[in-house]
Length: 222
Image (cartoon, rainbow, N blue to C red; front, top):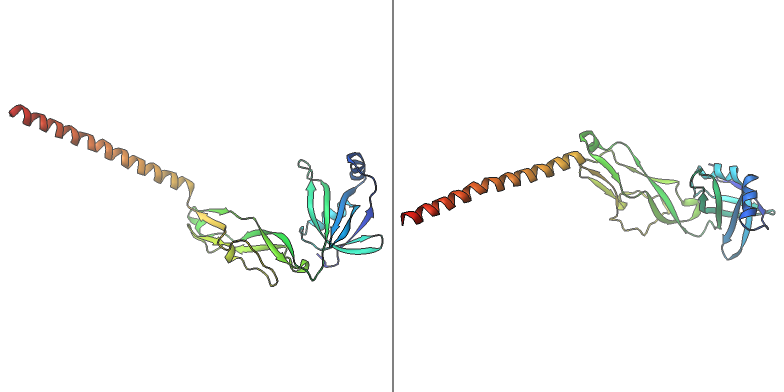
């Protein structure tokens, strides 16, 4: 995606769900622009054009062109229809290239864990990471290579290679991914332990009966 992503916006004066519905049917998306101490502005943008931009990631820098004024922004609070997936509303937050901001970046796994060849199951527990970075330094995603992981191995936030200029306040011990033992094997092992315990209990009963009989025999002889 080129660095100079420009999206033209138009002022929006009509409010309410009825007006918003008419805009969407016309291929326009209701939006709000705010941040950096400026007044919030209600605008509309071309829905399809924004949708194409967002396919490159929600952290794509967008130059919003409004009434001849260019404002550097990021798309936030992106709302979609839960059934159709169509864009419904979006907020644009104004940013500066010299000021770090908070952002959420997707975490993707790369490679096939060695442990899966023995039936291990990859269990990803962290799918995104909260970071702090200047807008132009925000990565599209973070990639973690899991190829060397055996059953019982895991990787934590501290194992993520953060690009230069990117930091996180998330606990470095937070688990990102583990390779668990096969569920079937774990269940069978548990059942085996229960079976051994049951056999032990059954085996103990005759011994107790024998002891009881022995005691009875001694008493009759006395």
